[in-house]
Image 1 (cartoon, rainbow, N blue to C red):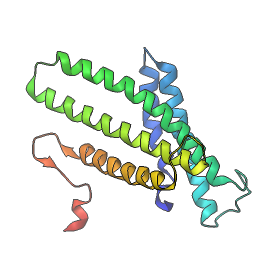
Image 2 (cartoon, one colour):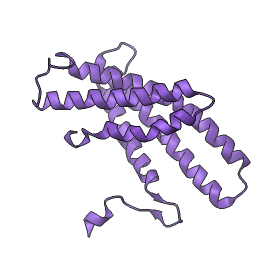
Image 3 (cartoon, helix red, strand yellow):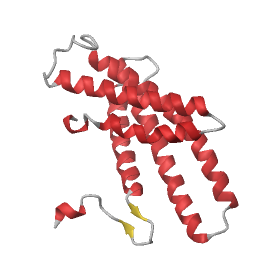
Image 4 (cartoon, rainbow, N blue to C red):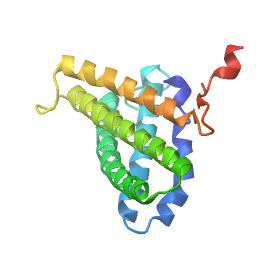
Length: 177
């Protein structure tokens, strides 16, 4: 986790998408804001967990709960946003006639579905950590964590899929040889 401290910076790339959104601009802006908040609270949790700053400095003694609650809310908003994105992608797929473009659209749609699984399982895992009665128990939270990891691995595989038809290109390939 210590290597993810600057992860929130990547969301600056999404500002233009939010500004260009015509149908659901509020949803896009809330999703962006929640992603920033989630990454920043996770950063605060990390630096306090490893003793770089005392726990009570920024978010109080319950820094883990604040980070989990923020992540749970972000997962909910991103899940709703993902449903909108999937609906749009499926409309594009229905009207697409070009076979090569259709392959790319289906690949993107698969990525969106795996992201939905990750949002759902991460959100449930956070809810369990916070002790909500409707959340899964300890075993369910462990299963949710494992499923979230699998979904994230599949998402990363799809993200690194070579569009030219060669298949998966590992992102760490240069370091292997």
